[in-house]
Image 1 (tube, rainbow, N blue to C red):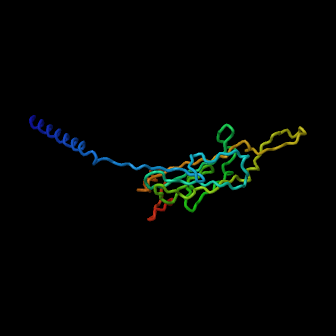
Image 2: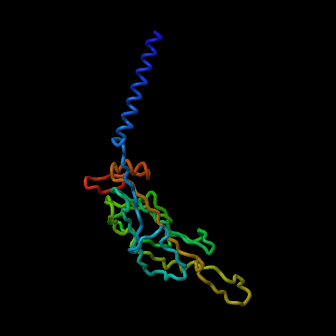
Length: 219
């Protein structure tokens, strides 16, 4: 019985040795090529980073429409679907986000013809958008944003310079937000178009439909 165990063990070692030798001699058979996912932001025709707009509020004219076209480019090697998150808020002189003025005063125009806005994930400060169509390597989306506008209603927000009404000195007022900056930031990410529904659910936690033409819609 002991001799049989020794023989079986020796045969097992030979089989394992043969498998390892085969893999070593034919390693090119098992090489896997991994394709890269890449996506870039383009602002008004120029490559850019996430902070797109940061201007002192007194440098802007409330009610005026400012062109702000943001699009995505597939800079990777495979076809992708894209998500863009737009953040809009005010900052003080120390660079801190302020909460005493609503981000609703910052209007951002979104191209809803080719982009889907996720109403469940969108807030006063954040707009979540998905491009409807797959993007091939090297191609660009249409613009997700088309314009920026500061609401004229912002002029109705004031702070008192002198609150002593009985001093005989006239009270002057200045816009409360004069010292603030308007800040627009963009976060962009992408998933592969292969098995897109599962990939989007895994990466973004969102349920989508993909029709036979590849067009995306939210469930």
